[in-house]
Picture 1 (cartoon, rainbow, N blue to C red):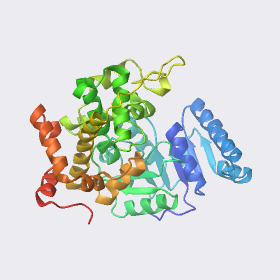
Picture 2 (cartoon, rainbow, N blue to C red):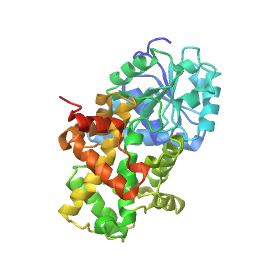
Picture 3 (cartoon, rainbow, N blue to C red):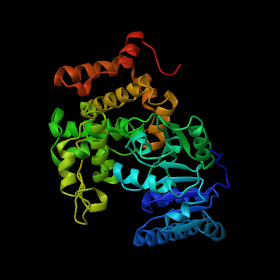
Picture 4 (cartoon, one colour):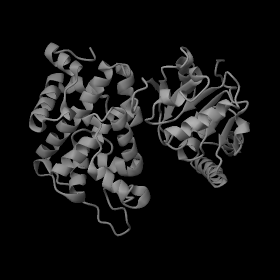
Length: 399
């Protein structure tokens, strides 16, 4: 594979929100970029949206009109795969369906040069499974941006077990030159962020479903949990607010994918609450209703502002989050620094979970999980082997 430089031509397939954002990032970094979608309506919408975005950026003084025009001129909006023939790196950002992705990758391979790198922006599917459909799997890699790509700093780079040895470093160098915060993750379900964040959503839903410790039912309960985690934990958004922003269709499907790919491990099990919202098409803000009601006449629910209750909620959720991060480190999913960087830059957590473990104490997190396990007798609450070792040795992740 040749080096990726400022003159490398970037291709992006899929002109939806994510694909358009990635194309914008690449063009802003100075690359000639091909944004491709076979749906002409989607492509036209992407072009109009891109122009509108830069018009607003000019109005706000972020760019001059000249600079804005230069960036847009670097993007070719195309509906023909043949326009990928001269690309050096192609990033796929289409529907999260393994068969569809495999078919698209095989088709791209028949067009591009032998040294073109082909990447998937999948958030949870196996990169190795995608690469298995290709004639040259050594050039396949995962490059997972976070939405909106122009604003979110984090990018996860995920080599498949068949990816060429030096390819990860080449891709990391390029993405770093784009101003991104790049972390390296093993090809396991959910990679880093979508694996670790399952507990933030899942345990919060579980608390609400149980009416745990007197949590109110309905939207008041959602608001109480959201308030607790923001008030005590310092999270910028509570789990129910965040799920409604991401989209419950997306969040549920990612949860389901991670759960099935982990052979139905209880830690990642979706909830019926999630499934029913998905079935009812209550996707969150974009549909006008999710966990909360976003209609014009909706009354914002008031949380139960009980500090003692909030601290209990926080301890239960943070124990699950930290345990997941500790276990990811134990299983070599990513390095200590990359695990902490990922949650800070990918989902805006106030601090890294391993650093948080040091502050609270591994022994307290372990005791919290043991108590939950004794109460529920579920594998969901099993402590990581590494957490047990850290607690027994009274050691920390950071000196």
